[in-house]
Length: 258
Ligand SMILES: Nc1ncnc2c1ncn2[C@@H]1O[C@H](COP(=O)(O)OP(=O)(O)O)[C@@H](O)[C@H]1O
Ligand SMILES: [Mg+2]
Image 1: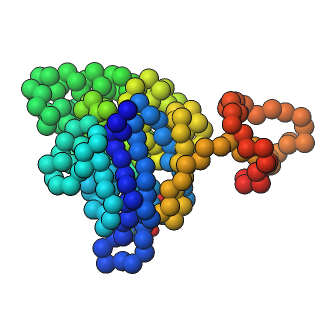
Image 2: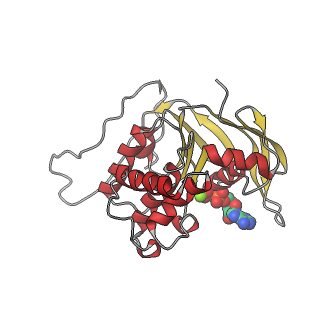
Image 3: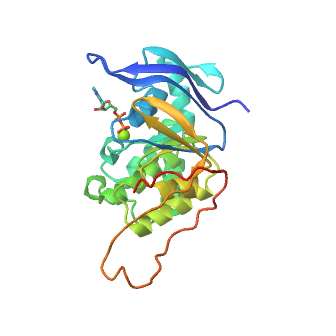
């Protein structure tokens, strides 16, 4: 199956700096594949997304979209019709006065009539549990609401792949659960940057890690311990943890990292 996106030997340095942000990164995202991307702050995850979208231009390497090299603005315009980016900061995503205008913007841009665009926007908002938000003032929304509306602006364009940059930041538990539910009902390819390990285990099949610009696949599960303290902790009790099926576990017991 031809990947939707492929990165080959990508090296990226911000102009006027000397630190290499992405070091010879190779990656591919196939139709329907669901990939999580973890890594410490500043390791290059967002930069990788921006390279894929053409916001940043790598000094070395090749970006392929459905098997074809992406070089100029016209190539990226085609990519943008198929690949949607949820920005880390929702304020970078939303720019219209009202929610409806923001969500209808993408479909309008892709050639829908105003009536069609409005219908798509209303339906998409409904699918995300945001009915009644149509006339809300975008900049007055809470952080979590902005995240969901941002996701609506992307889903309204019916992309084949979604790049989500820390989608659960600022979400309360219920909204986070709704987001996971929405993501699990999508059949699009997903690439999700997150520090929310449970979100990634819930929604993704493959996990990659970025460390100082080097991307590696995490193909094995490591058994590890969590320790914590709280009041009355000596009384026997249980916590409600999600049970992750432990498959492909490395036989060496990992060092507890928490
Ligand atoms: N416009 C910029 N100019 C110079 N350095 C930048 C710029 N934007 C980000 N950086 C630096 O690049 C590194 C990687 O950033 P980023 O890709 O945002 O990391 P992550 O998303 O993994 O937290 C960080 O050290 C960050 O400070
Ligand atoms: Mg980031």
